[in-house]
Figure 1 (spheres, rainbow, N blue to C red):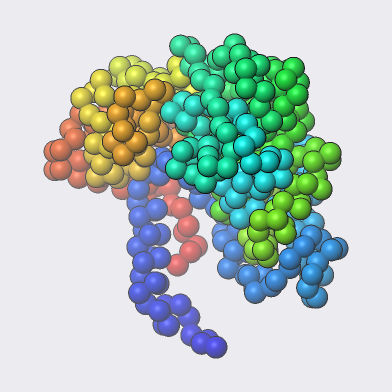
Figure 2: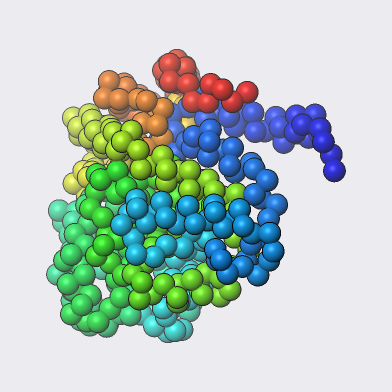
Length: 415
Ligand SMILES: *Cc1c(COP(=O)(O)O)cnc(C)c1O
């Protein structure tokens, strides 16, 4: 095999990685599903664990030589149980979408009904968007949020009574409020439905004690590990003991092949980090920071969906400011602020050019930014949107952004 460094062997890929690192260092990363992992997590991802096949589960593998892999996966499982108070954990899902698919395969027959939230109200593609294969196999029906931006529990109950779903699904990608798991569990019990929460976005806030934890209440909880939880890209399923066998069989051999143990080691490291007191402080700061942005943007007459934020993100209807979500995203990009265009509830516009933008504080909080920086950022966001199309003005903001990010170096030891 080649023994030369990446830089010497493949300067094309090396240069792209370095340019991406510089982009991350210089910009303000405000996509709410993104974050920055620690050097220890990066180290595990690039470790020799990537060489190993280990189909099966700790103590029950199809391959030899898994004794150290078993140590890694067992640590990941035990730490996740401790972090969320879970009865059973499967750390093998390759990402959030496969975790959800594995749950559907485990619990549903083709044609069975799932009650999830309307996608324009914050649900995820894997919750039955018509473009997914899941929507062809299963019958997805929808509840909505009410005028105050809260989950419409009356509507949810009415839909549950009418459609008798096999699964009631909560947990979202663009929803910014708290979720009342007990009330939803009570409705599910009334119709005999399994409760499933997809906490992909808010897992870190839950682990840090800053949001309600569905794990003790719900039957099944899926998550990613790379959003607020600040671990490697990956997925995880937590469930009650009663569903453990079905879930494990569904992940492997039902759906996936060999687990990615380098990634599972990185998950274990992220869970260890999340168990530390510093992580609680981090998640508190995520929420303080979004509250400052919320106040500052409200002062400037921005239309905030769902009535504001209880978590790490805001969904903003930018059309009253005379721009579409796409135009706002482009203007902010040119100003060095990365957000994403997003549908708002019952959006009259199209998904490729919707009415809103979605932004969040997990990544910039990881860099150490606090209330004072949020005020500066709110000013720049407003200036960028007001001056969309004026590239000179936007470049001026980008300059100021770069100066701020220099004070919060991201990977100072990563050359
Ligand atoms: C991000 C997300 C997913 C999908 O995760 P991937 O790792 O991108 O597959 C699933 N559900 C929700 C609610 C999400 O926000």
